[in-house]
Image (cartoon, rainbow over all chains, first blue to last red; front, side, top):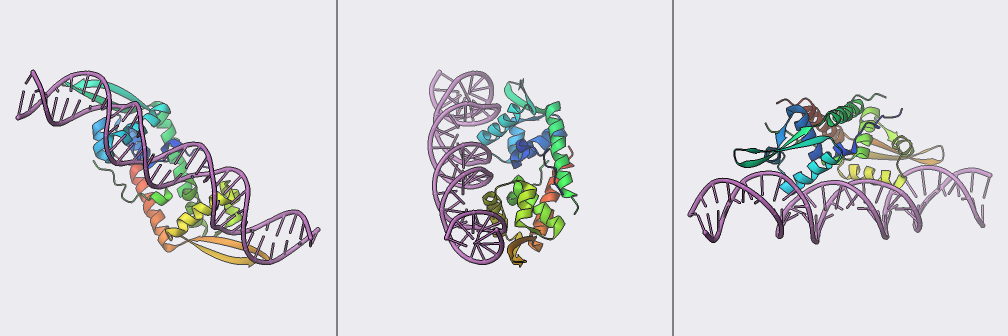
Length: 99
Length: 99
DNA sequence: TACGTAACTTTGAAAAACAAAGTGCTTTTA
DNA sequence: TAAAAGCACTTTGTTTTTCAAAGTTACGTA
């Protein structure tokens, strides 16, 4: 019996990146400060995890102004959604693995 | 909306430990060399991940001889099964998370 | 007696994670 | 209008994690 974890994606191994991705897949967009509150991480730490996901092209960034305040929104890319789906599939397979 | 990742267990964040645990939960016992083949890791690396799970008391060790060869079997403890279950629950919650 | 196997432990290096402080820009407040 | 604060980072430096490789002990076999 071989376990198929080829689909397992290192980009989603970290808890925070996993959470970010699940939020972005479920919410089609989420901004920096809301993510920060939700995940309860420092802004620097959040920024670096976001950057890691950006580098993989799993998320996209949209900068704008809300009123007069700058606002950065993050979105899951098609790419990212597909990769995340595969990753979850891999986890699922792991879970319902039989003898 | 807060995501409940309190159940998320750092001991299972690593891919290899996740695989070990899923094998041990599904198979009630598995030996060192079979794990090594299955997971395709060096013996030192495997040993250290096993040790980490042992330290959490998530797995137990059984040493014996098969014929005249030493054999080390690993088993998921009740503790470990429960913790793993919670962890999977947390992943599941993450997955079917709604707006 | 040298070699092989099993199951580690130790060592050391590389990578990852993180907090904290610093940055540049703008806006709000005293 | 000067100081403080918000936003979204980047940089710095430390700690933690991961890993391969080599060393170790104890047996068994050629």
